[in-house]
Amino acid sequence: MTGKGLERLLAHWRALRRDRPAPSLLDQAWEDRVMAAVLARRPALARIGVLDRLENLAWAAWTAGAAGLGLGLVAALRLPLVGMALDRLSILRTFYSFGSLF
Amino acid sequence: MPTYGSDAEALDAIREGNVHAFRHFIAAYKGAVERIVAGHVPRSAVQDVAQEAFIRAYNSLGGYDPQRPFANWMSTLALRTCYDHLRSVYANRERTFSELAPEGAEWLDGVVDRASLDADAREREKDAAGQALDWALGHLPPLERMVLTLTALEGHSVEEAASLLEMSAVNVRVRAHRARKKLRILLEKEMGT
Image (cartoon, rainbow over all chains, first blue to last red):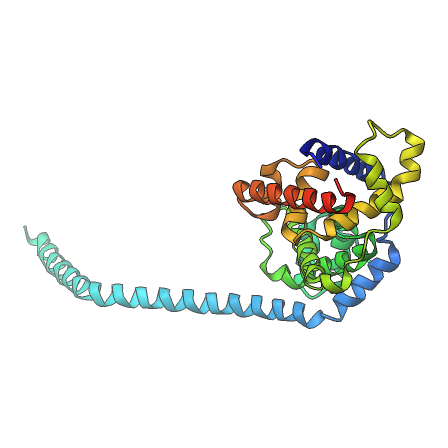
């Protein structure tokens, strides 16, 4: 068989597929069968829901933990500075309290 | 049963535990799935393969990215289901391959010599031609069969077929070439040309 012969054959088959009247096989009864099969697998979906919720919870816990750790770190680093700032403030307050004398 | 305005609404309902909302996807996409499945597997297997595609879709909903159109996702799933079906059939080919029936063989003998078929003749010969096509495609390995179906019979470009099958365009070209070669050898043997 030549390449041309094969192409002609493929063209016939292509035309056949285009022309072939194909009434749908997927009717209401088929839909019901699929739904029944899906309902029989309901636990799979419940698992998806539970996993989703667990994922959300885990994410919330992780976010809260990370935020707490961050705040703690900042506080640990900043507290001495805050103390120093307060010290300076008290010096200033002392200074201004004497301001009225001048 | 409540109706859903969009896939996203139905998906939310399913995620909240309303499994019946999956009917929205079956009703909306069964036509598209049937077109794909009927193009790749024999008509006798269309219902089962389409059902399997929807069950897979349901089981994989957890991994579905709502940013991607559901139709594309479902098409890929349907094609993969066809591929798996063809693979299982091909693996059992010793048992399932049958000889080409006389009507199919007769059609093959005549078709290459005819310039064209008129409408009546085409109508008469449809069954024989369909039989010959199923027989010929049944001898090809699943992936080559799907590539040939998409490119030579359904008119998809190489790039489109590559995207549908999630393969490279080069791979599609190679598979299409091999499929044609195998088909030619098979037909030469059958037709004695």
